[in-house]
Image (cartoon, rainbow, N blue to C red; front, top):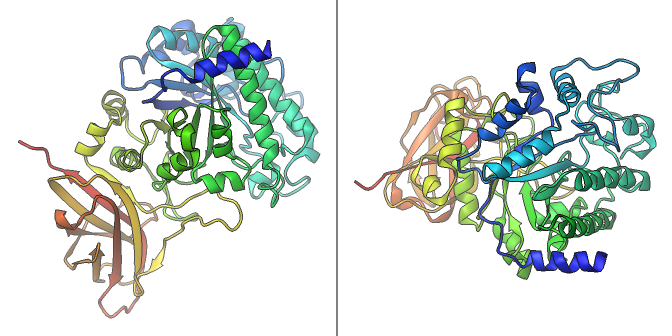
Amino acid sequence: LLTCALACWTQAAEEPAMEPMFVINEDNSHFFGSRGPEDMTLAGLHAFVDGYAGTTVTHLFLCPNAMRASFRSGTRDAIWDPVNGREPTQRWPSHARLLHERGLDPYAVWIGRCRERGISPWLSMRMNDIHSVDEPDNFMHSTFWREHPECRRVPNGSASPWQNRALNYAHAEVREHQIAFLRELFERYDPDGIELDWMRFGYHLTPGREGEEGEILTAFVREAHALAATWSQRRGHPVRLGCRVPAHPDAASGLGMDGVTWAREGWVDMLVPCPFWSSSDFDIPVELWRERLGEAATRVVVAPGIEHNSRPWPAAVPVANDLPLLRGFAASARHRGARSLYLFNWMDSGTRPVSSASYRKLLDEGLGREVVLTSPRRHPVCYRDTVPPGFPNEIRLPVDAANGGEWTLVTGPRPTAGQVELIAGLAKLEGVKTARFAAVLNGNALTEHTDVYPLTEFGGAPGRAIRFDCPLDTLREGTNTVAVRQIDGNDPSQRIVWVEVRIAPKQAP
C-alpha cells in the first residue's frame, strides 16, 4: 500500500505547480475569540469563509491547535477541558465548546465551504506553541506539557525566554505525541494540504545542539511526507505538505529546520520562509532559497511570509504594518523571484494590523505584481528574529547620528515616474528638533530635508522624523544603499532609530 501511495504521490507532485498563491493564515483562537455566541452556528462558520470568497485570496490555512486542540481531539486535550478541575471561561474555549456541543466541527465545515467558494483549504499545525508558559496553570497548556517537564528544551529552567519551556523533539515521547496529532488531522479531515508550522515558536531541539540534532526534525518531516502520500491515495487527490521555517536557509538549517533538504528530497511541496513575530523581515532571500533548491525549485513553492509588526531592533517599539509596508514587502519578494505570498496575523478582525476598510482593499486588490508596483510602498530597515547562535541577525539600528549609518535595502523594480523619499526617524533626545542632517542615496548627496508626520507611522518611538526627496534617477533597480549623518556640530549628538525608503509611482495619463 505504501509503495502504491508513494507512486501516486510522485504522480501528484508532477502536476502543474500550485502557484500563484495568496495565503491568509487563520490562527487557532481568532474566530472563537472575535465573534459572539450567536456566530457559533453553521451560518456563522460559513460567513467566515464567505468573507474571503470572490477576493484575491486563493488559500486559507486553518490552524486547529496550539498545545491543545480547538476541537474535540482524540490525541490531545480540547481547549475547553478543565485545568486542575477548573473549566476555562474565556471566549475562545467557551465558543469552541459551544460549537462542539452543537455538533459542529469548524474545520470540517470550513474545508467544505472553502471548496464551495473556490478557495483552497489547508490545515496548519503548530509544532511547538508556547504562549504564556510563564503561567503554568494557563488554560492553553496541555496535560502532556504539564506532566513532562523533563521533555522541555531546558528541563526545570526559567520561563525567560519562553523558548526554554518548548518541547524538545530529541525526546521520543515528544515526537510520538506530535505525530499522533498529525496522523489524526490526516484521518479526520480532507484538506488540500497540511502545513507543519515550525515557526510557532521556532526552537525545537536541545539548546546549542540544534544543527547536529536537525536529523530528528528531518525524520519527522519524512514521516509526515509518508502520511501525506498515503492519504493522497486514499482521498483520491493530492494532499500537499508545507512547512513554515526561518527566513534564511542557513538560519533554518542551523536550528534544525532544514527546509532545503526537505524540498530537495521531495518531501514538501511548499516552504514559507518567514520571521517569528517580533518583526517582519523585509530581506528574505527568495533567490537564495531557489538557488539552494536546485531542480526542486520548479515544483516547490517558496512563499515568503510577513507578520503583523515591523520593529527596527529587538528592544524597539514596533509599528503595525500598513498597506504600503505590505506592498513594499511584496514588491521586494516578487523582485527576488517569489510568485506566492503568505500573511500571518492578518486575520479579518482584532489582530489585523490595518483598518477594516484597508483590509477589504487588500483582499479585493491583492498583492499581484501590477498592484504592488503601481501603488505607494514602503521599504524599512528591520532585522531577522529567528537565528541560531552566532548567525547574523542583521540588527542595523539604532545608530549614533554623529557617526552616521549606512543601510542596504532591496526595493524591487524602479518606477519610470513618481516620487522617492528617504525617511529617518530620530530618538526623543535633547536638541532633536533643531538638529540637521545630510543623507546619501547610492552615492548621490541629499542635503535638504523636511519634517514628516505622523510619527506613529514609524517604529522605534521617534521624537522626530525627517524626509529627504530623492531624484528618481538616483534610485536603482533592485538594491539601493542609503546613508544618514548629523551635520550640525553634533552637540548634542542624536540617534537614528528608523530608516525607510518610500516609493510613490506615478501613473501614466
